Length: 267
Image 1 (cartoon, rainbow, N blue to C red):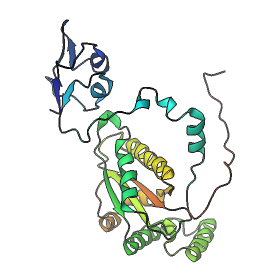
Image 2 (image 1 turned 90 degrees about the vertical axis):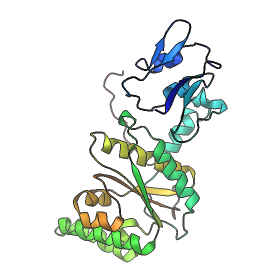
Image 3 (image 1 turned 180 degrees about the vertical axis):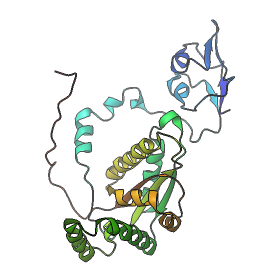
Image 4 (image 1 turned 90 degrees about the horizontal axis):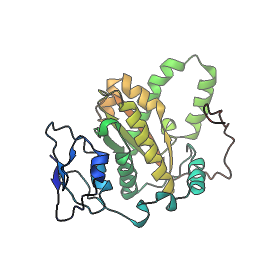
C-alpha cells in the first residue's frame, strides 16, 4: 500500500487531504486518520500534492515529490498569452534534418508522456523508442504496403505517394530519425483517450526542446489490424499512438488561420 499514513510530527490538522479524498482520510476531531480498508486507493497523489507540510507517508510510487516557487500560482510561471502562442506555433512536421535525436531528449519526451492524466489513474501505458534506420524503414514499408491495398484506386493519394517516394527514403515517416510508440492493452474504455493525451504531452515537450513531431495515424491504425507489424515493432497491445520525432528542417513564419467556433452557453 504506497500511501502509508500520516506523519503526525508534521501534520497541522488542516484537513486539506480529506477534501481531496473523502473516502480514505477521516476527521477524528483532534487528528486526521488515513484508512484504505477496501484497498481502493488509485495512487493519484492528490493528498501528497495538497499537504502544506509534506506529512503524507508513502512509498514505491515512482519519482519523489518536489516543489518549486510557481507551483502555487502556475499562471505566473507561463502566462496565458505565452502559453496560447506556444500552442499555436506547433505544426505537424514532415521535413526533418538528418541529425540524430540524443537519447537524453527522447527520454524527456517519454517522461512527459508518462505524466499525462489517465482515466482512474490507470497508468498502464508502455513505450517503445525506435531509432534504427533499417527497422524504421521496415516498419514504414510494412504499414505503407497495407495502406496502399486500401487506397490503390484513389488517384489523389497515389499521386501524393509518388511524390513522397521521390522525396524521402522512408516516406511513411518523412525520414524522421526516431519514432515513439505509446501503447496499452486496450481493455479499458479510456485507453484511446489516455494515449491521445500522452502523445499530446510528448508533442508539447518536444516542441520546447526544439524538435518537430507528427502523430502518425497510419501506423496506429495498422498496428490495430496486422499482427505481423506488431511483431516487427516488438510491441503488444490494442491501443496505439505513434509519434515521429526529429529536428525540423523547416521554419514557420506565422500561425495559419483557424476558425473560431461558436460556443454554446457563452454569449
